[in-house]
Image (cartoon, rainbow, N blue to C red; front, side):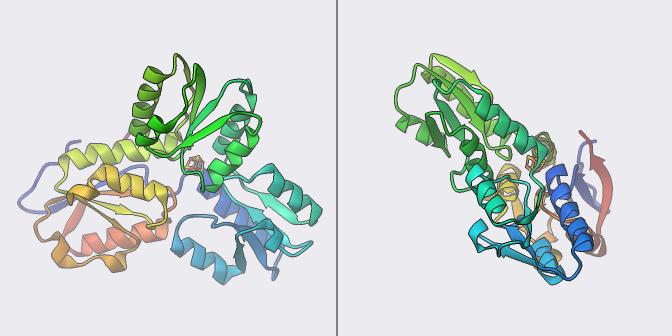
Length: 298
Ligand code: SF4
């Protein structure tokens, strides 16, 4: 259904699917299961489990302690590794420390780790992603035998050394359009170019729905933490740089005057945004004159 302006009611369009992706849901459920299995014990969580401060604060209140390095987890403690996966060195340290460990790595990240490991090590890998991101580190670790070149933008293609052949992989949460554009540029430069870039289907669905609504709505609202890369990419797609979109973390950041001239509003969410926050925002919008009139389907 197309978003059309109404003179009577302000219209709210949902860029479905909303909320957690399968990997985040699995990680959060694993944490909840561990709370039942180890009542009263601290659960040490390596890195942030979900890039959302509401989820993080709620986990801390329930007994989670977040650490940056596996060495920070006491020997024999209860520990959880999240959706992004870890390096084999981290897995080894976990074993040495006899951690009572649950590993909630997303099956799609595992697929990409296995895929990266399968390629002929004589063929260089070009990887598009953020080198510092735990997911990227875990995937690249599985392809450690390769000559790996990580790029994080189109511009960095120019600094790659000459290559006769290469395999192209990508971080799962990158913008599918940007990945396709980078693959095209690389294919023009590398004669034997094998495009194996894989973008998460759920992220793609979030992106497609936001892109569609951004074309027809007066404005877009994206709910996600500023440190969620996935939320920031969605906000870019929705037009944040043109003033067409806002990225908010929760309903407390909303002000009635910001919506005075908006008749049709599209709402999208990062894959790390919890249902409770989405509900708060939708309730606030309903209280301030918006009516959910359609749900964007894929
Ligand atoms: S965004 Fe996709 S790949 Fe990443 S954790 Fe979620 S389901 Fe897995």
